[in-house]
Amino acid sequence: MRGRRGLSQTIEDYLTEWSDRTGITVEVWALPTDRVPTPVADAVYAVLQEALSNVESHSGAHTLSLALTTSRTGLKLTISDNGVGFTPGTRAGRGLDLMKRRFSEVGGTLTVNSVVGEGTTITGHI
Ligand SMILES: Nc1ncnc2c1ncn2[C@@H]1O[C@H](COP(=O)(O)OP(=O)(O)O)[C@@H](O)[C@H]1O
Ligand SMILES: [Mg+2]
Image 1: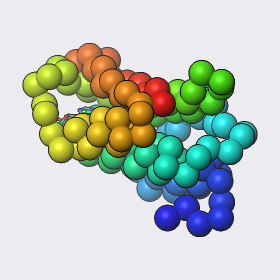
Image 2: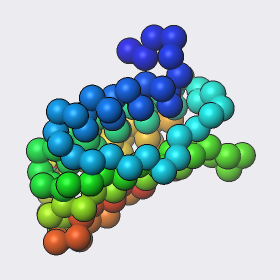
Image 3: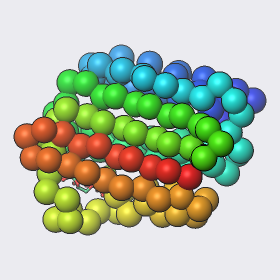
């Protein structure tokens, strides 16, 4: 899926194409420089794809922000949009479940926070 390129390069390329296509501005606050283990990278990439698909389909946002950092305490992923938001707990869809499952499969946790009229933030730790 990602071939020989690293996770950060793959994400940058994906975001550039996604932003061009959707017209949604992307702000990248951080991407890791060190190598991320393949199962973790695959989970992050899968979550990113679903999160961006939701932003594109449901949010009406004009800006998406992303931060992905790694440290000795683990990996942290934050994806935020400034779209319409929704009331958490009222929209149990497959995509939201899938994102949580992908992170729990690699020992992580993922939380979806959303405020109507403010936007949506997905926070994950592995
Ligand atoms: N970024 C977002 N902005 C606004 N609403 C969202 C966002 N992400 C998810 N939602 C809401 O949560 C619902 C469930 O999302 P999901 O589980 O991915 O299912 P689906 O995308 O197939 O509808 C969406 O239909 C939408 O109402
Ligand atoms: Mg979805």
